[in-house]
Length: 157
Picture 1 (tube, rainbow, N blue to C red):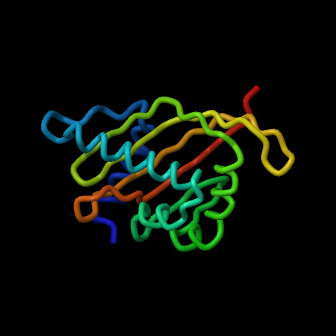
Picture 2 (picture 1 turned 60 degrees about the vertical axis):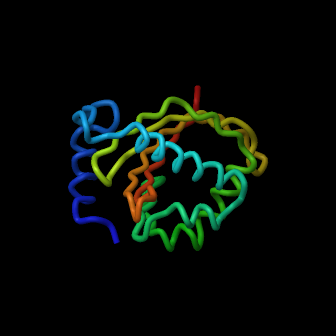
């Protein structure tokens, strides 16, 4: 179950325009260890995809998590039961170069925004794209869990 403030946090992130416009948290509300732990959780998610570790992916997703991609929304269960297999196959076949990441923490809620470049071949098709990612995380029992993922990408020119 996500905290009641989760909806308000997502709205605030949306209104503020994401990482570029979000102000830093006031002093005392964001510990460096929280930011590092959020970044590590996101890193473990990507590492799990590349390693084909669906159990790790599942453990990193909060109950009620949402995955937004290609104009659609999937629940945690839909993602784990379907789309995850394709994401693992893609991550294993095509190298991803992560770009800069911005992490903001506000109490038990956080987000990580980043970009990446993905180049390689997948199912006989050349891939050369840039991507943007926004992950919203919630602290559950002292551990950061991914509550929402939003991915977008476009072909590099």
